[in-house]
Amino acid sequence: MSYVHAIVWLDHLHARVIGFSTGDGETVEIHSESSQRQLHRKSGKPGSGHAANDVTFFDDVAATLADGREILIAGPGTAKTAFSHHLEERHPELARRVVGVETMDHPSDGELLSFARRYFKRIDQLGTY
Image (cartoon, rainbow, N blue to C red; front, side):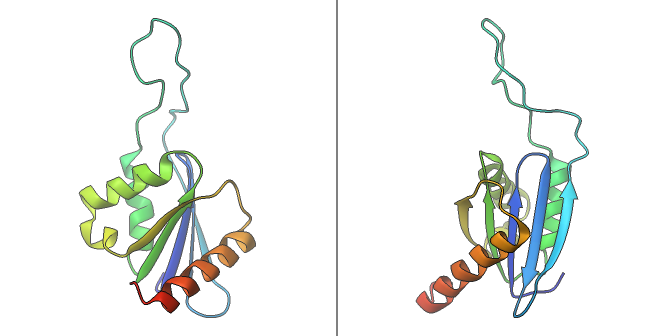
């Protein structure tokens, strides 16, 4: 996918990447192969109560974003920040192209693309990237 802008919406099991320049964008979906799901903490049990991050899944998402010049990360919960930290640790060049990390629930592809267009328009007007 070779576009100027890319937005990735992800949780710990699923990601949607939309790359776009002008006109319609191209959407790619990526799914985690992990069988782990959210765990629930029980009294007296050790551990955080959360499944570990799926490094292979994050690497697959990063590979899909490789050609994007400006990247916006979005999603609910902690997956978006975990992915951002993963990029900083394992894909530093890609991490430098991330312009923001935003919280979003579960938007449709149209809502996600509309949000990204507004976000990147604001970034472009500010000239901060």
